[in-house]
Amino acid sequence: MFMLSTAVSQLVYSSGASAFRGANGSMLIEAIPFLYAMCETIVQSVGDSQPDRIIATTMVAYATSTIITGAVFFLLGFLRIGALVDFFPRHILVGCIGGVGYFLLQTGLEVTSHLKLELSWYVMRELLRPDTLGLWSSSLLVAVLLRMLSARFKHPLFVPVFFMLVPAAFYAVTTLLGLSLETLRAAGWVFSLPDSSTPFYHFYTLFDFGNTDWRAIWQASPTMLGLAFFSILHVPINVPALAVSTNADKVDTNRELVAHGISNILSGCLGSIQNYL
Image (cartoon, rainbow, N blue to C red; front, side):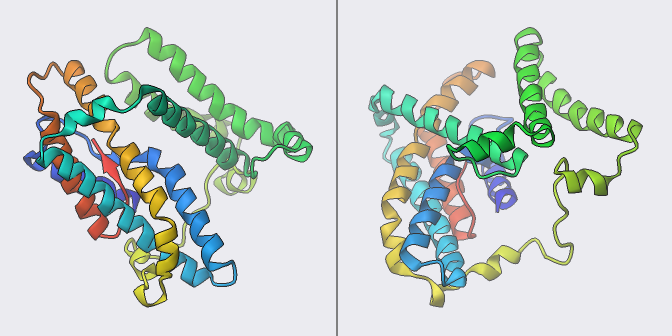
């Protein structure tokens, strides 16, 4: 779903919908907290005893929220009222961005440590265990190192080169230590391999409109609207910043809103999730 959303947005922006020549489309990573919230609402409404119904409802909710987000984008741009977003209260915007930042930090700790983060002595002890500490602290050190080096090296190729060097350095060190991939996977340093027999379009089999709980979809609609309004804040922030960094003149924010609308509506109709420039 991530790759499909990214591919759809890239095709739309590269087809002339965006004014930026080198526009890069990507799945809207900031949407993940809202997707989690939708899933939790659906689980509470449907109940834990019906996993197939939960999955089917969640897939429909994700696609629906993407279409709603796209519709809001498109209408703002088509009606040429994108400037209204500039009147959104700044403190709410800062709070939303801060909340997303905390969520990403929490998710990063959970993914790297393989723990469910909660305020308890057990979790604190597990985080500070030598084997667990190495898992999440190494990722934190890489992030700190990137931050420090980025302040010194301003070349646009620095960040992609840095991310290419990190896995090369990791596998060079593990090879010198004689550690196999199986050992690294067992210790949690490398992700487990997915089932190779699963096709890339497998997620389409999870849609089941006959087993969808439409009442749960309605209960998740406030979160969908919240995601739509949060998503539209990216355009007035990203577009001017991108215009300055690329020396682009007379960038029409409304045109970019329409492009975002088209890409998200297409992504939602294809059963995928939100994307942006």
